[in-house]
Every structure is written in C-alpha cells, then in structure tokens.
Image (cartoon, rainbow, N blue to C red):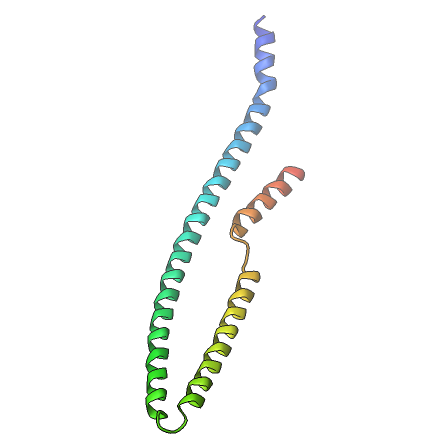
Length: 128
C-alpha cells in the first residue's frame, strides 16, 4: 500500500510543480499589470495637470492679446482686427484638436510590457 501511495505522490509531483510554476508566472504577470497601471495613472495625472495649467495660461494670454489688439485698432479697424483674431484662434483650435486626435489614435498599448511577457510565456510553454 505504501508503494501505491508513494507512486501516486510521485506522479502528482511534476504536475504540482507545473501548476505551481504556472500560478507563480500568472501572479508575476498580474503584479506587472498592476505596476504598469499605476505608472500610467501617475503619468496621465501629471500630463493632465500640466495640460490644464498650460491651457489656463494660454487663455489668459489670448484674452490679453485680444484686448491689446482691440484697443490698438479701436478707432480705425476694430472689426477687422477682431475678425482676424477670431479666425486665427479658430485655426489654432482646429490644429490642436486634430493633433490631439492623432495623438490618441497613435498612442501605444497601455500594457505593452505585460503583453510581451505573456507572449514570452506562451512561447516558453510551447517550446520546452
């Protein structure tokens, strides 16, 4: 009877090691996903804050520029000057919007490193 129990334990040994290795690999990959997600969140918050601050200062500068141009051309070409600034601002807004859209479409995958590690794991399991 002891030989039967011993042989069953011996047969389950490699399977347990394989399952243990797969579990450890999965845990490592999940930890990597968590780290990448935290890094991406921190990066996005920083970019968002700087972008909002930049937009606020740009708006202040545009308001000051508009007031300066309106005052400078008030007696002669006030409507033409304001129309020119409006067209300039509209072109700049369209350019920025298209560039932001292009940036979103060409952004890399968020979990690129994790996907690469899963690919390596799959290849390692296929070719022992």
